Each structure stands twice: as C-alpha cells, then as structure tokens.
Image 1 (cartoon, rainbow, N blue to C red):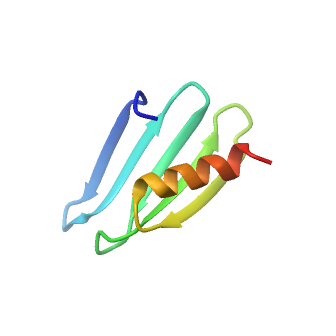
Image 2: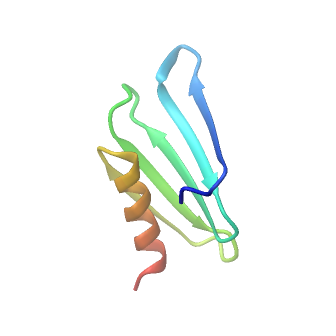
Length: 74
C-alpha cells in the first residue's frame, strides 16, 4: 500500500475529522477518521467488481489491512 497515491481532506471547522483516499490498479481505500480524530473506518472497494468491505479500529493501518483482507480473502 505504500506505493498508492494518497489524497486527503479535512473538515474546515474540525480539522481532526479527516478523509483519505488511496488507490492502485485493483483497489480503492477510503479512510474516515472519527469525529474527534480518534479511530478509523476504512472501506475497501474492488475497482473491477465494485464489491466492498469495511473495517474499524484505532489505527488506520489496521483498518486498511482488515478491509483489504475482508474483501479479498475467503
């Protein structure tokens, strides 16, 4: 995932509330922080089929791994 392009946004009135998107040829990862900046929800989307999976955890790297595994592993 380190080579994926990353784009980020934050809420103007609450900069701790962030949205990040990263992608490669196969997968789109959408990361959404908690309202107070703590915790993450990540949605992984298969670009070809549009199937998706989501994961929640304290660290973004853990939600990315969890959503990716839920999407692609049986």
